[in-house]
View 1: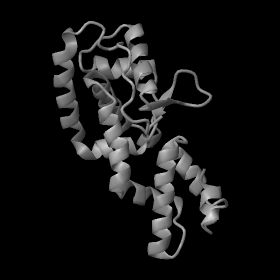
View 2 (view 1 turned 30 degrees about the horizontal axis):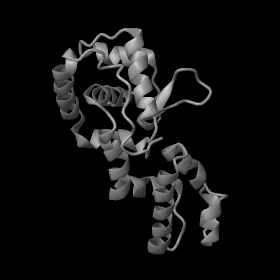
View 3 (view 1 turned 45 degrees about the vertical axis):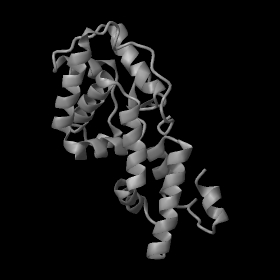
View 4 (view 1 turned 180 degrees about the vertical axis):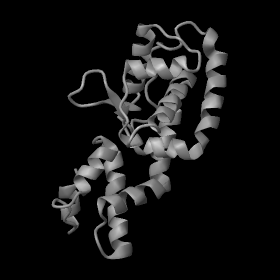
Length: 198
């Protein structure tokens, strides 16, 4: 999805780090891959050379359209509880060696929620993870049982740039308002409003 379309345009990237970089950033989602390829083409026009993986990473982070796709899809496809959990996991990821490669499972979900005095049963933890997976916000780590990552690693960077403590505070307020709703953590997910991150 990267090398052949670009080769048709005379841009050879098969022997570069770009295909791997793009896969890591998109988990193979076609629309996000297309945006990466668009950025490569523009970079080539502007600089008369193919970008490195690091160049591409910088360009993608600064691209308003890419940010809108990733951040907009996240906000459109999470309820207050799911949004809060993602913010808490992103805050937790800041302690990792590489936050964009942060992995988590049931234990991390339980821990970050307990730190905010939210205690869930195992079935509810499983339910919220399932909802985030169906919505395309998170994706399973290949070859590791019940471990997950954010589907678009740039989401971590975008959210950190928003003022993460404030995001957590507002999502916590919304989650507490909804706390009286029976089964709110395990309700069936709505159809995703966009499938950008799946």
